[in-house]
Image 1 (cartoon, rainbow, N blue to C red):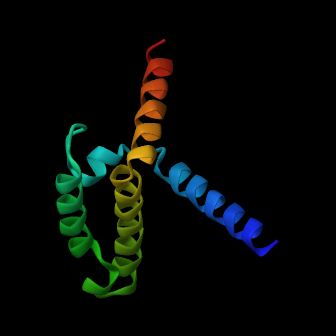
Image 2 (tube, rainbow, N blue to C red):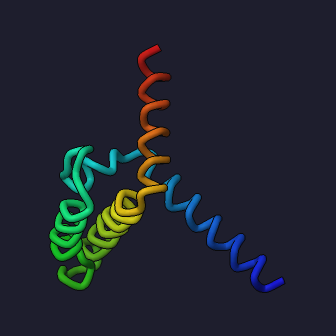
Length: 102
């Protein structure tokens, strides 16, 4: 029973992660081209993660903004670094683009 609950929680976490990223173009978030390889994705993520890490800023408002930006950056990285998630994301964005052009 515990394993089933754990699997369900992991699936829900992935769905939530994906839904959070729908409004943002993940390639734009990381500042990379759609054809970027894993090395470029990782490099862009690390650079942005350092820049927007909540521990690197002072003040409550700045920390809150940095935390939000850091979460978006981390979500973009998580989707784009994983081949299956990236393929699913690209397919979704293509479908979204097709719907918007019709």
